[in-house]
Image 1 (cartoon, rainbow, N blue to C red):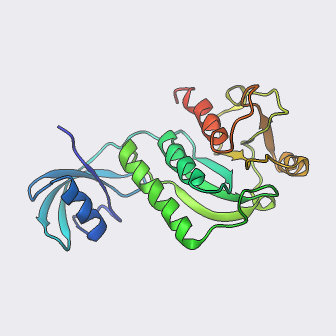
Image 2 (cartoon, one colour):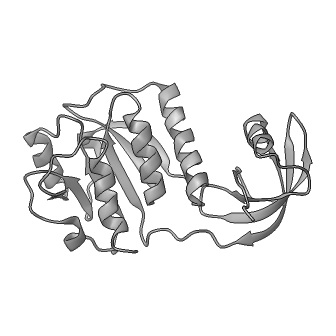
Amino acid sequence: MTVHRVRVDALDGEVTLGHREVRHLRVLRLTEGDEVRVFDGKGREALAVIRQLDDARAILALLETVDAAPETPTPITLAVALLKGDKLSDVVRASTELGVTSIQLLSTRFADVPDISAAKLERLRRVAAEASKQSRRAVVPDVLSPIKLADLPLTTQGYVAHPGSSDRLADLLTWTASVTLVSGPEGGFHDDEIDLLLTRGYRAVTLGKRILRAETAPLALLGAIVATGV
């Protein structure tokens, strides 16, 4: 039997859900007495039973904690250039399914758009939450406001997709430190931007002989990690 999953703010005894989640429960045709799984977006998950459900709110009583799906041995940050249209939503959705811990948006020289609105940023965060729910993750990645490429932190385990490299991510990756993956815009990174990343500890890696679209490249990077089976 399918057990439906619900995102909550905290796993404390009794949980009250607002209108958005109530509407979701109604669509699923759940009723009082049905069980659901709840997760807090930080790695904890539990079974709960619906004690009360009406048009305005739902009250859930927690039953017991359960083991959440395993995460990668160390956190993975995906730093991705701003993309136009729905491309960012597609990247956020798929990268959440593939296990990123956080998504750092980047403003780069050839970025498709110079910035995003607060409303678009909030929508991306909702996309991440829904993707975690669908993929049975108990962690919802942070989607962070755009920063300049120069403001990316120094790293001992950072990799940037770059057609000029022959190094493969799978040959370099270790789990001795957190991982940051950097992916550029449709026009790619300027040579100066690659040089900047290299001076900050990032290593250039290849994604094969083909030129990938900006929304495909970050998922190829993550796919190389997923393929390790960790």
